[in-house]
Image (cartoon, rainbow, N blue to C red):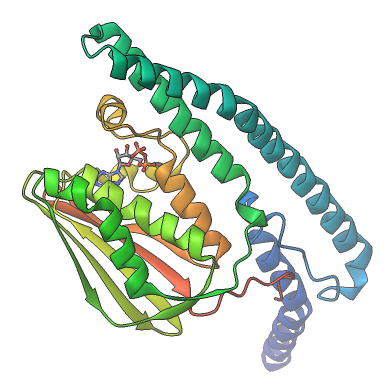
Length: 295
Ligand code: ADP
């Protein structure tokens, strides 16, 4: 009797395990749905043929949510677009005025700073709202792109005595030249901005397991561990007044996050302490974002 009971138990275990497998695959697919991938991700309607109409209804719900997010993004884009022209005009007029009046009052100089900050913020919002539409089919050699970013930031680094260097291999990826350049610019700019006078910034590029792995290393003030994830949230700054003073708007890293994700990659803080930080980015060698998640 015991043997039959044991055999029966084992049989039930295997049969139920087998029967539940598609459900587990289905749950695995659902777990991959995030606000950041709503437009690309859809559940596979063939995983659970018995529940096809439920899967279909869930996919339709994802579609509606995605449209809702798109509308929100479009609203931000339109608002930023409307603000951009008057702000640029205001900034140009104020710059002209301050050039003609070098004895400008400190209050007016502060006003000009604020207008410049608002203008940068508007540009960043506009960039963030329009990322999806940028084609991502350029073949890009990463080393010259990083050298280009160094050249753009050389003056700023030199002013604080910070050295910029690059190490590693020649790696080629497929993506948007403009967006990836922007991504590396933001990372290196932060590494320079939050560094100490006389510090260094190093970018290391490697190819590993079909991916480009890039490390941006600095000798700056570091990021407290509790903020390693928050810094990728829009408008989050560890030290608000310092970021403001340095001309930041808290949108640099969210843009980096979004660009890495759009290319099928990832960005994170690998390590950080009070003698510096290492930010890591991975990018697939050829961007491939699947339309449907397969279990
Ligand atoms: P910001 O415009 O303020 O630089 P970011 O989104 O680029 O905004 O970065 C968010 C915050 O993360 C910054 O305000 C800063 O506090 C912190 N941060 C980013 N990169 C670094 C770094 N390399 N070292 C230290 N802190 C950093």
